[in-house]
Structure formats: structure tokens, C-alpha cells
Amino acid sequence: MSKFIRILLALTLTIILVLVRAFEDTLFYDPLLNFFKSDYKTAPLPDMDVYLMYGNTAFRFILNSVVSLGIISLLFKNREVIKISLFLYAILFVVLMIAFSLIIYTSDGTSSHFVLFYVRRFLIQPLFLLILLPAFYFHKYNSN
Image (tube, rainbow, N blue to C red):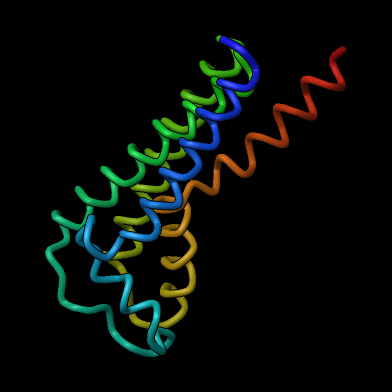
């Protein structure tokens, strides 16, 4: 595959990530979207269908991860990088979903909202891609 085609496909996948973010209100059930747009620091968590929210959060994480892994595979063309990325995404998912669940169930309406905001952010946004890309580029150009 030519370099131009790979870059074009990577840009297309990036646009898909942007579209997932742009249409998050209509694509996913997430009562915390509006909650975190308000003055959430002292407010109690909104009423929500927790299992539906977990399912939508997991689906969004998986969707973002698949697209992110596509971008990584197009940019690096290295099976080891893809395997490491997949492993890291799986570990991140398990750890963050456990943390997310614990925070939801033990929330007392104070400092836990701050932590919930950032744990949820890593689950619903492709932030891990922004961490992995520079790390893999750094490794690639320093190992030569």
C-alpha cells in the first residue's frame, strides 16, 4: 500500500474519531455528558440506568480503540506495535471500567466527581492514542 493511501486512510479514521465525538449525544446513552457540563462539583449524580451506561461506555471505548488501532497499524506497519497496543488497550479498559464502577457505586458527591470525570474521559475519548503515537514514534526513531 502506498504511503499516500496509508495517510489518506489514517486521516479518514481520524475523521471517524471526530464524528464519534461530534455525535456523542445521539449515538450513546450517557447521562454524565450533561452532568459534567453543569456545576457538577457539588451536585449528586443524576438518575441513570447504570448498566445501559456501562454498555454504551464500553461500546464507545471499543469503537474508539478499533479506530485507534487502525490508525496505529497504518502509521507503523509493525505487528509487534499492534500487539502491544492491543494489550495496553485491553488492560486500560479493564482497569478503567473497574475504577469507573467503583466510583459510581461509592460516589458521595464530593471529590469523587473530579476523579470520575477523568476516568470517564479516558474511557470515552481516544486519549490513549495521543499517548501511544508519540511513544511509538520516539521508540521507532531512537532504536534506529
